[in-house]
Image (cartoon, rainbow, N blue to C red; front, side):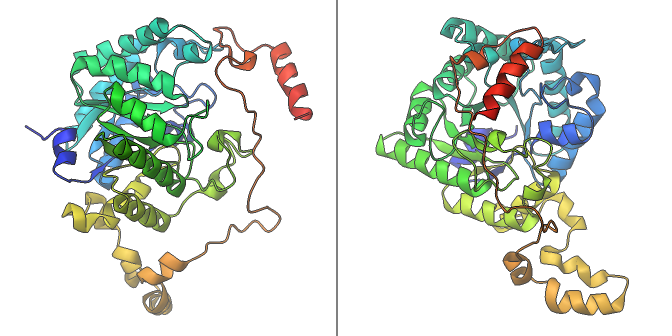
Amino acid sequence: IRPGILERLDAGEIVIGDGGFVFALEKRGYVKAGPWTPEAAAEHPEAVRQLHREFLRAGANVMQTFTFYASDDKLENRGNKLTFTGAQINEAACDLAREVANEGDALVAGGVSQTPSYLSCKSEAEVKAIFKKQLDVFIKKNVDFLIAEYFEHVEEAVWAVEVLKETGKPVAASLCIGPEGDMHGVSPAECAVKLVKAGAQIVGVNCHFDPMTCVKAVKMMKEGVEKAGLKAHYMVQPLAYHTPDCSCQGFIDLPEFPFGLEPRILTRWDMHKYAREAYNAGIHFIGGCCGFEPYHIRAVAEELALERGFLPAASEKHGNWGAGLEMHTKPWYTCLFVCFRARRDYWENLKPASGRPTCPSMSVPDGWGVTKGHADLMQQKEATSQDQLKQLFDRSKSH
């Protein structure tokens, strides 16, 4: 029997999460930007299976079910019409995650995320009923633990945790917030205390911000939990994009979101720094979210290989700190690479150019500043109308 998530963390092990399935599969042609829903688990299982395998090979030992935004109210939101039900998508995602997890020493985590119903001010009972519907599938498929992830409001995350903990399975809770706190201004420290008191044994942040910003937010969470005399484990699964110019709502307010973010991507060497920073902060569940590809997770696993006691399988095709460059076909390049580039200090200190001389180094976020209860966020099954879009466009001109 494999040790569970809490047994691993209690023993001081480093647990490595996988990467950002939604963005990775959108780039591969299996997810539609806008809805960001995970029907590919049922429509194109081979694509989801392959991505799981690549993350497993890269060193991840948590296979998170591809169930992001798989609640019924999200699947049928704003004109999104699918041929599969939420239950079918969730079941397919669980089966794929378990199949690949069994190919290694990985655990399966069933995930729920924020709902359109909460943004539309539905009641606590109504929102919890949505989580319960997803949870029924996770119980049926016997996932190893549960994650409430990608919540902008700690109130909704607490509701999710209260539902998930009823299963008796370990519960992790991850907010998509930065150091400024959630969308209602609740600090990371206070958010973490609320989540732990609700029953979460692992707390942290995911998405919306770059690795170092997310690590800073989790540090604040850790300080808050310890100050309150509580205990928890900590997780971080950030973006693979640099976000020094982001405000409270993170990268979704950037003018480059979602189709022009590539110039912001972190290198594999940036990921080494992230992994070390997270580990030194006492965070032992370290993974990634949007923008993370398998090579990013491999970099995390390679940086922490000494602590973990092994390298990931994918390191068979990756020389340590550029060592594979010694095998270059052209001998004059080999001399250049061995003398200068097959070294850790070269890659650690490199300041990569963007190759875009007319582009700024940072952007001005849109900063819509709206959240739960605002008229713009009242959700509907029908597609957004032209009149609704015109109102938003007119407002953005004066913004």
